[in-house]
Image (cartoon, rainbow, N blue to C red):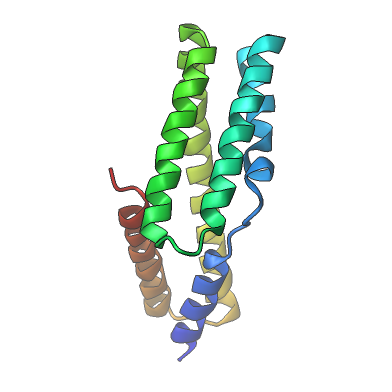
Length: 157
């Protein structure tokens, strides 16, 4: 029973996403690009306009209740690809390479931080709920299945 409660609590907590507006989630993208890539004023202005344009399109898509979730993901992915294509045209080849490397490094850092948070959370649950080693192992297995399920749903090529 405790294990079921722990799973329900952990699922609820992991399901909570900060559903901030795109400009809040990605508002710093232009700023970080400016810093990391040493963008000139014209490049920075162009990228801000591109981000604004696609942010508005994505916001409209997210609010569209007539589309299925999978269709929204596909449309948003298409918009992201279009946005990236426009950004690529603004950047020099060197800047594109540098930005690609920077994004990969950030993904790895976020992944490591996420794994660390999950482990700390699981250990906290184990302690607070006095889970046995077997229950704790099952909890970790369920989290692994959840991560794999998420990847399958959200990272389709």
